[in-house]
Image (cartoon, rainbow, N blue to C red; front, top):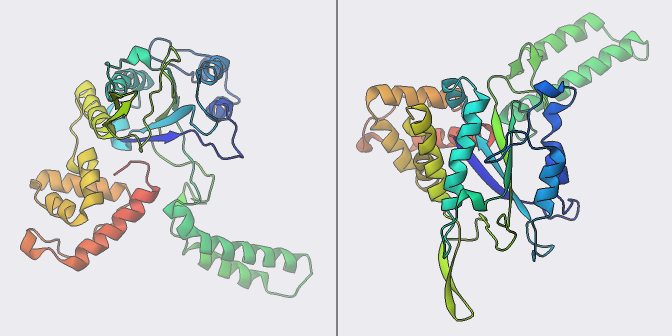
Length: 341
């Protein structure tokens, strides 16, 4: 499970309204019959019209400056393994969202308890993802794409009589280049904009910066750490505990759906990897044989090539070269994978 929380983009090229984001989240409904469309939902409603979402979010911004985000975008990204466990069931995902939004509310550090009824949010399930320019597959295919385009253009010129050349020889060279392309899907070379294979279901949530009564701010922004500050001479609690929210979100999925989470899938493991990859690797190797085997299998499916050397089994044997190789592979996979390892 991988969850991101990002503030509204306030660059000059972006609107102050939530309309652009809401319209973007409607893209998968284009061309679909009404009964097949996926609707926005919140804690109590299953079908919220797009117009209501924009009106409610844009109208809940009292006393916020133009330079302050009016809403936040949260994305919940279950792994393919998690999606398979729940049979990619949209109803279960809606149930899950409503459970963890209670944890989202309780993660705010304020003078009074914050409850889910205080949060104004709208969620939308999406089933597709496309390859982006920064994905490993697209980047590694790019040099070959250039060569292929050049050879195909050369063939067209020869066939039109614009230049001399041997079409058969050029086609043979073209096939040789294509044979070297590393990443394909369904017989097609992976490129930017192509749909990703497998289960890609995820949830987008638009959540207002202000509470439902439009009276006070509830910002999950990373710069707002759990703290106390003085306001008019009084200590005021403020902040959002992200670690608590991410950890609880993961545990709620496991409890709700009886999911047995492997070490490499945990939020705690991701934190350990970022802070100390050597410690992460050592802990990985200490796992029971079956769990360690499953961990490497999960990492492999996420695009992490396991170093082709004898993997050390204790701290004394930890080889720096092996760990560096593993870390490099992990970093590449983390930057392009949707599973959030």
